[in-house]
Image 1 (spheres, rainbow, N blue to C red):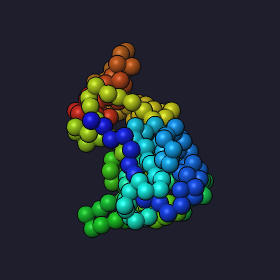
Image 2 (image 1 turned 90 degrees about the vertical axis):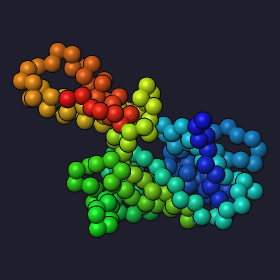
Image 3 (image 1 turned 30 degrees about the vertical axis):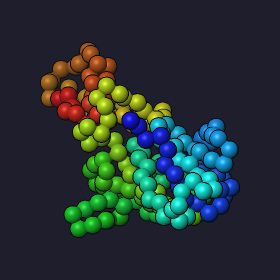
Length: 189
C-alpha cells in the first residue's frame, strides 16, 4: 500500500489552488469537485474541495522533504510564500540555521498556506533504515540527483584516500553509495 493523497481542509478552494500552483505543484486530472495537486517528484498528492473533510480549515500539519533546504527555502520565498527561518534540532530544542553537520531530519523550516495549514519542510539526504525499499532508488529532480552525486563524490574521495589508490570502478562505487544512502543501509567504505 502507498499513500496516494492527503486531504487538506480549506475555506476557499480557488485561493488554495492558486497558492499551491504558485509552488509549482502539478494540477492533476480529478473528478468534478476535487482539486488535486502534486509536488514535483512526489508520489503523494494533496486534495481539497467542498465537503471532502470535516476538518476545520487550517487544522492540518504535514511534512515535505527536500535534499537542499537552503534552495527550497529560497524557492518558497521566490514564490511569495512567508516561510519561517531555517532552524535545526539540538538537545536543548530548536536553534537558528542549518544543522552544522547537515544531518538528515535535523534542519527544517515552516510555512502555512492561506488557510493556516502548516507545512514543515525538512532536509533529508539519507533516509532512516527501512524508510525506502532497498531496490527502489529515485530522485525527484535533477538538483536532487546532482546533490546525491556530490555527496557520493566527496565520500568516494575519502574512500580513495583510505585505500591509497585510484578506483577505476568509481561509477559502480557511486551507484552503490547512492542506493545505500537513499535506502538507509550501510554505506560502502
